[in-house]
Length: 183
Image: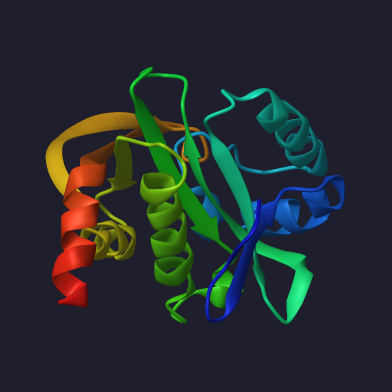
């Protein structure tokens, strides 16, 4: 399954994405903001992830982010994953630091959220961000996610508990937002 936006292509992961994933996540500025990513991040970590994600709950969607003009060059990932809570999908993302401040993640995230609610059969997306990463929080808030609470979560890259905000977005809220924007 592929999703095109104005500038981006969201596509399935491929085995040859392992090097680009490693390059993006071996940057502490990226990996420190993710809960389940180790630092340092090795090629073997990426190869294992690419294999393991194929066994995720089939309702889950893991997408590589690439520029439409360079569809083979992964610059990040955006996902929703079932597994922890059977009714909610966990929404997450990362982008290579060289692509920050271009509003690419807002574009990719909006496309995947729209797909999740209009074609993917998702009822509720949950997400989280480390509170010392307000840019990630702004992306989620622009999408319509509402904060439910704060808690301490373990960051594998930082090897410690970090304050995190938890958020939620329902398909009903997303669709109402889209209808309101179109009016």
